[in-house]
Amino acid sequence: MAKIKIKQIKSSIKKQQNQKRTLEALGLKKIGQVVEHDDTPNILGMINKVKHLVSTEA
Image (cartoon, rainbow, N blue to C red; front, side, top):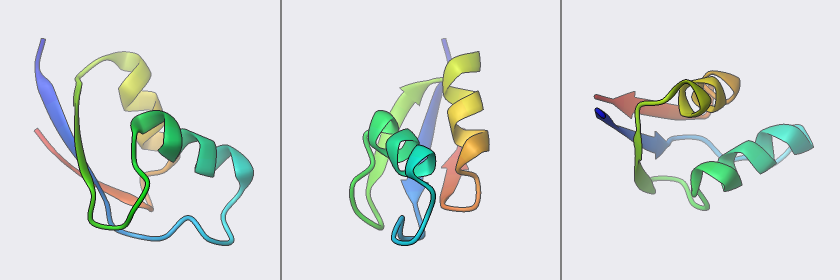
């Protein structure tokens, strides 16, 4: 399974509650924090939901 790095680049302040929860589920709490996850359809869907708040690397 391929790995994908996710970095939070924008704040979740004044964002919808479901977007905040998605960031928490990805393990992101601060701007600049990087987490690594498997490249699964579930994770890709979560990234797509908050794509304006995060950046990704393969």
